[in-house]
Length: 143
Image (cartoon, rainbow, N blue to C red; front, side, top):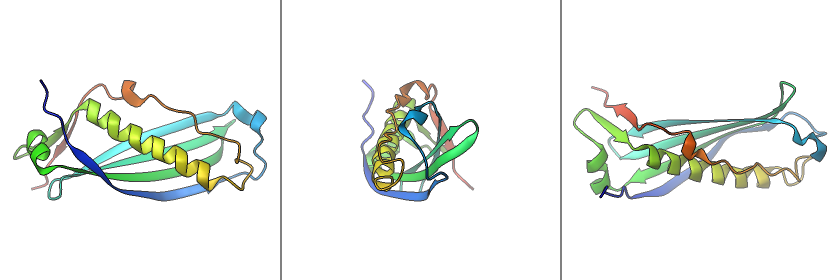
């Protein structure tokens, strides 16, 4: 049986948010939604950064852009499971969990930030991120 990796959510920060149109209409639903996840690992404090980037566009024109950082603290005992002297390896299931928590939180942030705008009826659709992460991610210690 695989040892569970215990963690807690320690910080969320919207690092960029912008809308680039004042006349978004609900019938504009045929838009492209681009999302990207990036990760970083801090060995000293056992922290995982999950950066989530979202862009909404229509006909190659960006309508909305948001960048969101979520920081998760790995329990020290759990950190000993994923860390070695030279690197840390985060399993794909845990990456997907961090991405899912981050994306879900960003959905709420976008809903709140667009309440009094032309995007007030827009809801960022759910995203099953489990299919994105097929391999664990390795982070090397800097020497």
